[in-house]
Image 1 (tube, rainbow, N blue to C red):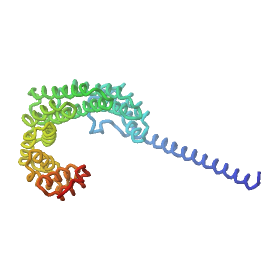
Image 2 (image 1 turned 180 degrees about the horizontal axis):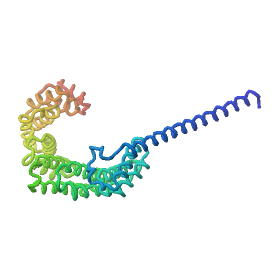
Image 3 (image 1 turned 90 degrees about the vertical axis):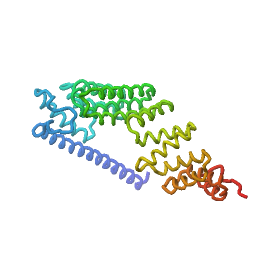
Image 4 (image 1 turned 180 degrees about the vertical axis):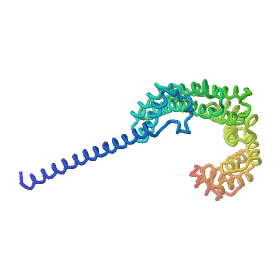
Length: 343
């Protein structure tokens, strides 16, 4: 073995050794800095912090037993620190200790559910357990007397539905969950206690009905959208758009046309490129090629440059005898009609 090779070999080993030590020192520095931050936070939490400072909590601080208030304040203050530091195991431990002191702390029940749903813990079933506990507390202790708790109640309910969707739970189960929540809102509307909150309750019910309609079959979806437009919000854009598309897909062209034209004439901002495209397709299929061409031109002018827009405009041109224009549009749409022969 040559001296040159030996020198190079040992030089490489020295460099590797130095790199490993540098990495260790860097890791030690990071940990040392964390410990300094930890000590500073512990001092702040024990001397200067009170959970009464938190104004965004769902759970009112006055509901916390005074005998454990200081302990919960310390734990919650440190939990914020652990969350910011990404120390999720410490965070979970603090949350559990808070719940051992106050099992009804809604925010912590939800936060533990969120942690279980997080990919780090990844236990969807446990997430649902904690979300349902939060629902029970909200329903039995707060919502019964105060409508302001409806928003967090709905949010937690939707978290449960979202987890069930992730778990691949059967649609019928999820639809039943939507029905349960809508029935609860219906009962609230019948309660004179919530009379002043009727609009708020209706808004939530509308949102839930629209979400449910996405999960059911076409016939039931039609019933939902028609109920929304007849009884709740005659100008609801989402319901009109979805219902018009279902009518169109089912070949109910006149129903789709009448619905869209009503919306276009009565709802500000409804006439978009998508609106003109669908209405143009409808008039084309009804055999009114000239008006269909006007509508499709407007759809493209308003920015809908989809393949469908050019395809249907091409077919309208073709039916009206403008073969070259038709072929140009078929080429834009990359359609099988692109090789149409013109005389």
